[in-house]
Length: 310
Image 1: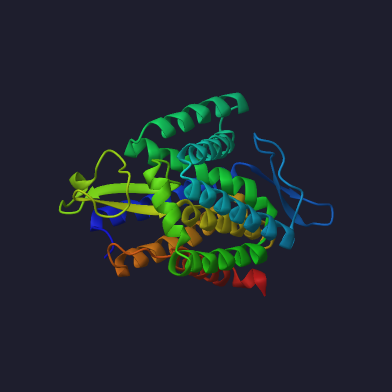
Image 2 (image 1 turned 135 degrees about the vertical axis):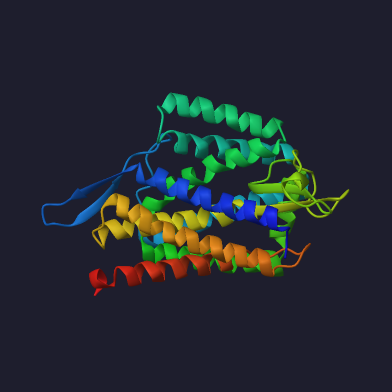
């Protein structure tokens, strides 16, 4: 088992909470309309940072993958140059904008921008465990709200497959994902969930209050992490599934929200299996496991709505 039972449970539950909250936030940005010829469509509100790119299909897939590539190359350059400050600036902007999008679903744009700015600034200058992980709760729904309307189930599935293949290469072959994770942790600006805990301690009491500057066992402290991509991409996929259930299966928004949560549950189960089967002090690509869970959840949803699709 990669981490102790308590830390594993916290990571999986946190993953599930952010998936559920993200789906709810996405649903709050949508309006269901029916065209004169009877077709059901999901209309998304503009985000507080402006309109989304007017793209669809393979162009949307290429757009997202290109963004991942550019972001990775930039961080690798920061690693090569030892530029922690540049990474922190990039990290600050990402938190500010993504959190603003999420908060903008529930409050006015001005309040969303101001509150997100305060949280992003506090995240950079504090290494408090609770603050860091609570801030993460707002980041990934914002990313999903931005990208879900650009995809359908077909292209969202390709996105999961592409990211899973990339994750395997980046962790087990080139190993640059491990380098990025260590760099981000050392900079005290890690994109994802982080839980440091005493390697000899047991229970909740073993969890430390402050985030360490190194991944792995050091001074009796281990660090459990779950990368941001491992949280964002399954949320994007389940959001697209929710959209498809409305437009293709004709479900009401509330019913589509509940059924799309099945994808999140299966993804969380797959993540749990990874943590249980994994070995301590080794890095694993989580996306292949999470993607398998997403597809299993989609299969269950398809079976439940079989009468609609045939």
